[in-house]
Length: 465
Image (cartoon, rainbow, N blue to C red):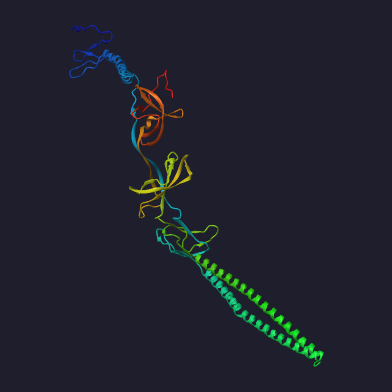
């Protein structure tokens, strides 16, 4: 038998291979379970268990070194740099700037007061003709619609006939009563002549009676005829007076009847005119609410036929926030654009500020009316969204600092001023804000350095205002 080759002593962690005899009689090594496989020519050997354990011990050490290096870098950047030993804060210098402040607002194009009219009917009836469509251009006085008016025309004819009758009565009064007055005057004249003759006769008979030429009876008869003539004269005068008074009263009554008939005719004509609906203004038909053939009933609210808008009389209602409304004044210039023409700018001027606020989603806005100065030739239409810029007055050379430097502390506006490199709080009075800058009205001087971000105060010595 061949002797087995000698092997080196196995380590404590090495597995001892077991040699077995193969089928051809050669002795071949066999791998031990749990141990590393043997290598053959052309194969890479796997690391041993000892090396794997060494790697596992190194990984935590490397992670700890990386963490320590990161903490050291952060500490150096924050506290380790040469200087004050405090975090570095951004600073700015109080300088003079020009402020061209403006107020931005969103609004809408609206018709002016009186530029949008709802045209309706004042009487009931069937719509006979409708002569308007949406988008049609109409002129003032142009016929828009007509309501059936046969009954109104018949009523007008009746009122005109009544007027003719009243006028005829008036003419009769004018024609007849002067003749009756003239006849009464003739009666007065006749009886006056009879009285004069009777007086002469009585005087003659009295003279004859005194001479006993005539009898007493003859004298009495002459006196009786004189008395009758005097009575007839009085009656004629009374009749004349009555005729004159009657003439005056009948004349007034006939004239009143004529006036009443004329009023009735005028009313009938007005009612007939209501049947023809015309445009009260120049403009464009914006909507049609009643169609031809429909029957409308006029009550407390007149039924609307069409809505007319004068596109040349438009304005912009800008809704300005309550924060900025105190800066806006009537007469200020404004510019605006609409989404339809974003590259076209329209000029305007502030004409009014409505006193009542508009509150929506707990946001308080005020309606600022802007009159449009530029001719737009129909480019603007009602309800277009407008982006408005109200131009305020310009301030030249005012003290300014970054708006971020102003802090609100205990109800005061505070700025931290750099004094020998240390922050010192100062109360300031601010004014306008223009972008990232804010105007300083008091509390700072030109050239001073302020902290844009307030640095942390020392723990043992907090800043006092």
